[in-house]
Image 1 (spheres, helix red, strand yellow):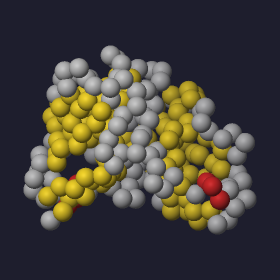
Image 2 (cartoon, chains in turn purple, green):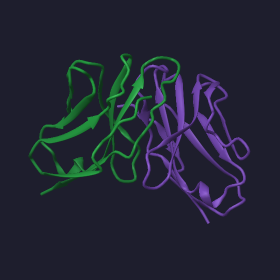
Image 3 (spheres, one colour):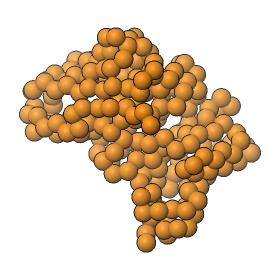
Image 4 (cartoon, chains in turn green, purple):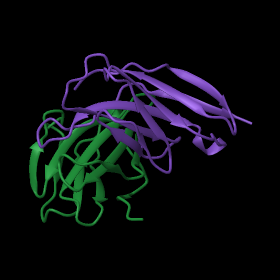
Length: 113
Length: 112
């Protein structure tokens, strides 16, 4: 069964450092999502791509966060500089199209010291 | 997206059916009911979704009331591996506004 891949699974960094997360969606999935999940809460959408285009980044803190999906396949989410409050699980999801079911990867757990 | 209301937590016995309720009284006609679950430290796992008819797959059954204001997820024979947080979400299946809005979910503990 095809799955969404994410790396790294765990990341520890110091505040003010830069971090990057990678996501490889299920093959053929045109829509890709990045969510952030703070401990004890449900995931919240950060950014949504349709192919290589951003369709929703209204909740992305653009002063420090950036996301790209240059060839419309895999994607990178970057934080620079990281802050203590960025400690969370970063989840990637993909779907065949925007109207279809989303499937999640295992996530990257970020700890900022 | 319509807001959903779920119990904070519930226990169930291994081997018995687990019935997870969800209220979505403000659901719109074009909004689907989705269920995901999240086992500790893993990404959310899709379980099932439906619009107005009852649905069944290899994981669970989804029962939606006729007025669509509530639904129940049924795990027919709960196992210890079903211990997880279960999220009930309503969303439109269209190009715009289709993001998943997660609430607090129901923390389900399956006991031996």
